[in-house]
Image (cartoon, rainbow, N blue to C red; front, side, top):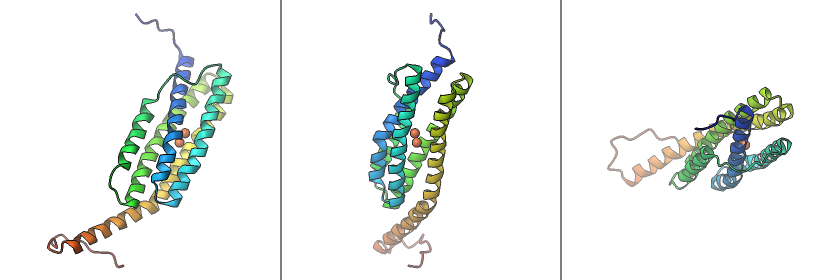
Length: 190
Ligand code: FE
Ligand code: FE
């Protein structure tokens, strides 16, 4: 029979270890996203968030030091899945701007996951009276929210480009195969 001895403090540490694993997985994944991006703005966004993410790892290390606990010992399966999906979409044959839209989608899934996880541990830290942790975790939470917002902004332009590029691709297909004129769409003026 399991002895149910673990309380909120243990759950707090458990969740922090999960986040530590998540952030470290991201430190490895973000350079790959940056490399796959065609838009300079998007690539720079990923590079900047990589630097932020390294600081977020350090904040977690600071918390673990204060708790006198090791940050290691857990693998974040959620982040593993999100990173895997991102890697998967990169192997597809999408047009450059369309691929950028896909990368943004993958990155926003990651940010939302982190926002949920940091919201949870920040609340636990509040309940446990770990006020220094609260401010460290809140700094990171704010960075994740800002990153998500920034991705929204970049997406506006890139999704428009992706749409336009797609219409041009369709136009090319029609030129190559004039017989399929049946469902021709209105082409944008060049
Ligand atoms: Fe992060
Ligand atoms: Fe993040």
